[in-house]
Length: 202
Image (tube, rainbow, N blue to C red; front, side, top):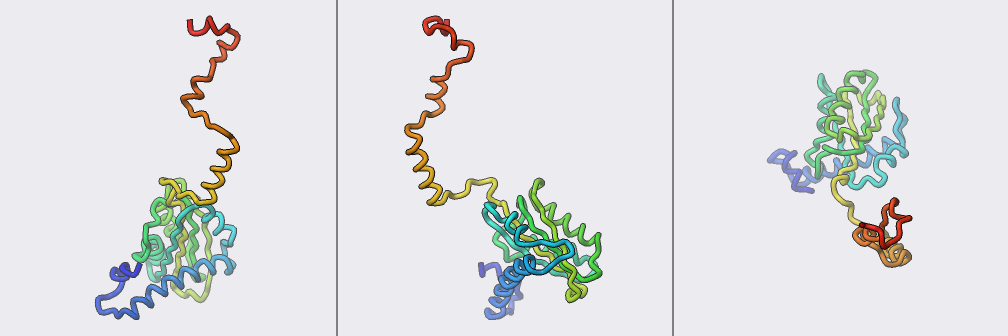
């Protein structure tokens, strides 16, 4: 929401500049997904990976962080998972698509450091799919893109009209339902099957 702009812009920022910042975040999101799918990587991600993470996973969040300098990888990763413009944190996500883009100097330890930061924010059993792109145009800058899903595993997902209609139709086809209490009263222990009814429970 636009209210979150107040936490990232300076006090003298004009409304036009603030809304441009919000539009830039949306542009980065669209471009981030497009780049994941279309740009070949050193460790490649494609549409199948996006679909794996997002299919039947409920809400999804996307964060993008960029940084340069000595701690660029860690800073970019922290920005990606805790952007002030995000509605929620990626903490507890059960599915994460993590992509890192950097120049030829992108270091192995940098990649590992960024991945650990994202992993620590996710669910301990999260499915994390990793990708890396070498782009000489990045210069000294590193970009970390995170798509996180699976925040709804702790609460019931709202049922769709199609699901409600389907279940009602199945219920009609099955006829009257016997609840657990009725079912337990009808069950007869195996060792009593051959005992005449008048001798049971004596």
